[in-house]
Length: 110
Image 1 (cartoon, rainbow, N blue to C red):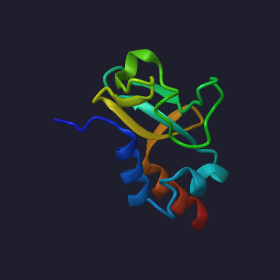
Image 2: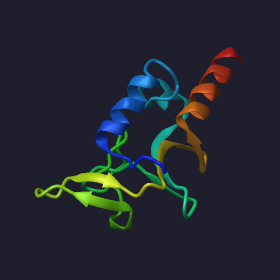
Image 3: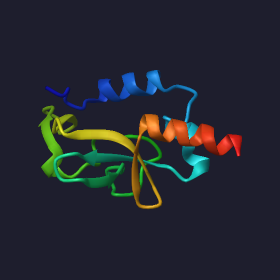
Image 4: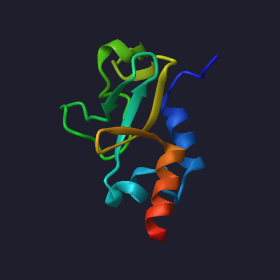
């Protein structure tokens, strides 16, 4: 069974892809925007701040209610559906962290 997406999971992913195109700070200049894919529906959601503006990094709190599984007593998102994957949107396509990292390496080499 897939692991539910949490803030801790996002932190682990960021650590794993640190200093590569798999994190926002290293791929922003290549047109990537932090996003989430609901693998059940194929829908891509840009990462958003609470006010609805596009976030510069992955945030669970800006996801739509239908993706949220659990909130803390203060309303902060703790987990989202198991089918949600973090990654990036670029030119209307979703890229996993690994795909984005590979694309940045390939683009730098051209």
